[in-house]
Image (cartoon, one colour):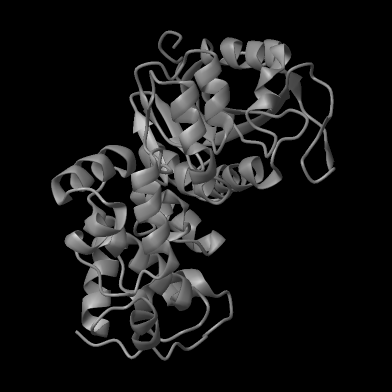
Length: 335
């Protein structure tokens, strides 16, 4: 990063745009900073592009910018949004050169969603911990083994480098930056104005069962995974799974842990929780969802759910399942 920031009344926020950029990835954070100006005259937003010319978003919307990245000057914060065309969109030499230049002219830099690939490609994330949208996390980790990828976090700070998951997570990250700059009261008022949570419970695993882990590599582990996936609710012991794979229990424990990052029984429990969560998202009550996942009681489902997601099943439904105002949930949950 460049040297110390000259003290200014307003912090300059540079947002790098490019063809194919995801609209909400930059509009969400921009709105947070603009709303903060209702409380403190704290930010000056500058939209940038590699050439200074207009860009076309992923929605086909044409957006004008104020300057080319090379002409933007020094920024307190630079934001690099994501794109559905990631990571190939960041192969554009002009985009990468803009990121390199802006990195040297800012106090802190933040990526939104797949924008992490741009930071990774320029070496900014080497030796750092970062996150991205869950659907890009495995690829980011595979292509850049020098980065510690946290696939579940909504956003991550590592020194003066910040990264967030996709779309709405950019709002979470921007709120965190506002709180860092101007305190919790200002950030809280912005969250209230935007009708969003000051801090969401849990991580990306609340929103996707795709975070279960890597795919099986060997025939034995694939056989066990297919067996469990076919009916996660069936009674199943380690011995049952070992007999199905025609290996010893000790060997099965070892290879499943190596390939899936968990024991065979943990995999069964994970699949049951995914099944129950899907039922919950489809409108089932907590009692119905627990039955769908093969849990003996709603209480056991609730415990497993809270352990993984950090919220209760009923709270999950209220906060994440529906946008209907005042929607009631018949959950059948008891503790």
